[in-house]
Image (cartoon, rainbow, N blue to C red; front, top):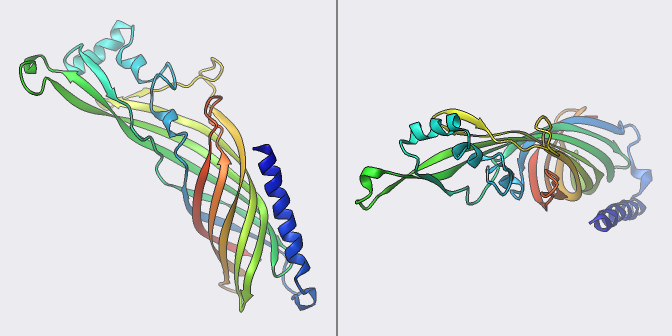
Length: 278
């Protein structure tokens, strides 16, 4: 994967150089400000490969849902026995397809216009992801043992929250730039960070925290850095003499490093608008 990242960066550089060689610098408007700065606001649609981390399953953490429901501590176990009305209950199913909710991304965009056709840019976006799913509990009902429904099922809500940032550094190559409208292709490298913020489930509106210790440290939250790259499309147009609107779409392929045994690669998407001052 490191070789692919280097190859991608090299291809971005070659594309920029090739594009610059075809540009007529004598036609460039030198009165324009080269630097631009702005804010990003959009939607981020993540890959769900790491969502399983919030399922509370014993395959993820030994301090998950079962450590509470089947606790060896009598006072803890008794709380659930009193609520369910029996000692005979089992987890029938963890979330079948764990997934995140779609999220907003908010960030900062900095750039430098090399020519009318080429710009370099840096994006820094923050994202707060939420996970809301259910696990299914099967509860034996003694008085229904001779009926067709000896077991009743109850869904217990599971929650998670995760923070991420994406740092993108790359180039924008215009393929149409006329009358204040600039359509471009972007190519960029990506560095990202991720951190678990909270993970818990509820029984009878009571919250129970699912723990994910890092190297035995319960006070440290799972986190990590990943890398990758991406490409996108954008359309800039003038709002005023000093302000541009920039509608963008980005496709990422990167690694999300949430835990030592959970570092998947996958595709992610974002779409939004930038307001730029130049």
